[in-house]
Structures are given as C-alpha cells and as structure tokens.
Length: 311
Image (cartoon, rainbow, N blue to C red; front, side):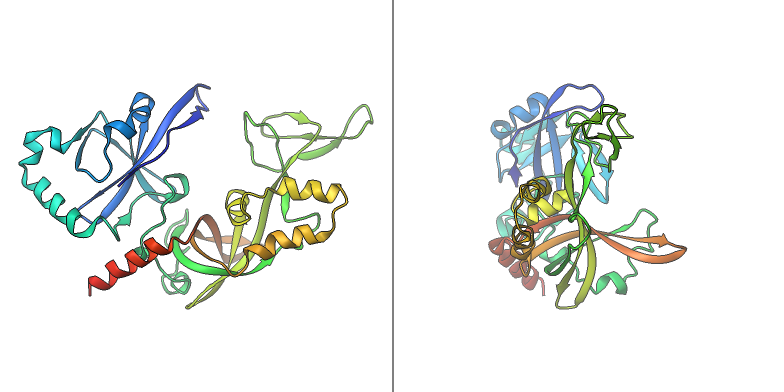
C-alpha cells in the first residue's frame, strides 16, 4: 500500500546508526500490517518494493508491542510479476481480484500506529467514547485496553502552577523523559538540575508538555491525559520549552492561552489506552492519549463508503 521514507536512528544497545523504512502491507483478509525494513533493505525499499503491486514476504518476524502487531526484517521480498509460480497461484488470483475491486480501502490495521507509519485505523474499526463504559475497558487487561475514536477537544485543564509541563532531563543521548530534581549548586552561582536515572547534573532542564482535557463525540465525553509527543502534534510542533522561554522573557499569558485555544474544537482521531488504576486505595479508570491523527477527509469518505457497501 505504501513505502515510507528512510530514517536513521541510533541503537540504544550498540550506539550505532541504523537505517529503517516502514512498509504497509494489506491482503484479501481485509487486514493491513506494518513491516519494518532495515539496513540495505530499507535503503532500497522504494526501488525494490513497488506500491500497489503483489509481493511475497518470506521469513519476516512477527512482534507485538503496546497493543499492536508488526513485521520486521524479512529474508526476502519477491515481486509477484517477476515470479511465474506466484502469478499462476490461486492465492495470487484471489488477492489481485480483491485489490482491483477494493483498492485495499477500509482494511483494519493490526499494527500500533503510535510507533509506526502514521495511518490511523479504518472507519469500520473505530469505536465511540461511550464504548469505554459499555465494554468495561480498563478492566479486561492488567496492562490496559486500547480504543480508537474520532472526537473534538472541548476543554483543556492547563492551570497547573508553573505551566502545563514538567522539567525533564536535557540529555539527548539518553532521553530519560522524567522529572529532574533541582539542587543548589556548590558554587552558589545558581541552580543545577540532577537526573536520578542517568546520574547527570545540568545547568538547565527542558520542559515537556503534560496536561489533561475533555474530548467529546456524539456518544458522550471523557477526560483524557495528554503527554509531550501528542501535545506537540496538537500545537503544530510548538514545544513547552518555547512557551516557557517566552514567560522567562516577560511575555504575557496570552501566548500561553493562544496555544491551547487554537487546538480546541477540532476533530482528531484519538488512539487511547484505558487502564484501571488505584489512587488513595480507590479504583478509577484513566484514559491516556497514545497517539492522535489529523482527520484525512478524503480517506474518511472512502472508509465510510466502504463500510456502507458492506450492508
């Protein structure tokens, strides 16, 4: 269905740079999955894996993480038109006919879009906010249940003291993503920041978004928690550090308020984790945003038409 861009990442274990590329596959089971290519396979993916053509995947590794499944590192990818035995197989004929009729539209995704190739689940796979209570999500799995729905943001709780962010370790080589403890420097020249995880001491900290809000659809509303990566998508890549520096520079609260105001009453597709947690010996359901996607109205229309056609 698609071949993503080649990106370079650094391996945490080996400290080496690796190239990767995400490919989206779909078949006549009306299901799609993400497959990650590595190294030379990633570099050559755009030229060796033609989009919208039939391919055969051999010896790919299936993994599961954070509620989604994905493939990785296949031994080989064979384009069907280059292999007569594939062209003549009944399975190829069925797949070709199905794809010509549907174009793969409306396929449900097995993969966790939060860490993959940037496509939300299809219209037919989505649920409503009311389904959190109806299906008793959060109680089914100790690690949490997942739900995807389309909704508007109607309210942000952003009035926490100091701003809707937390201070985090600035170590880029080891992004701890946790609060750092402030301690007075020995020289008395100011404050220093100490990270308990990496044991580093720094002359500054970075700010990362963290706040809650209310999202609403036609079935109801719910409180959700937003974290940094999802918040930056909401705010068109405006970082908490940028807004914090404006405060330090004497800017008014208008800049802070306007960041949130621009994100209100816009439709997004939310992927959320719902988990039963205990606070002060009381059980409560917490819904956390794992990823958000801007609404693609063309794809939305195609998905709706595909869903209607099934009735």
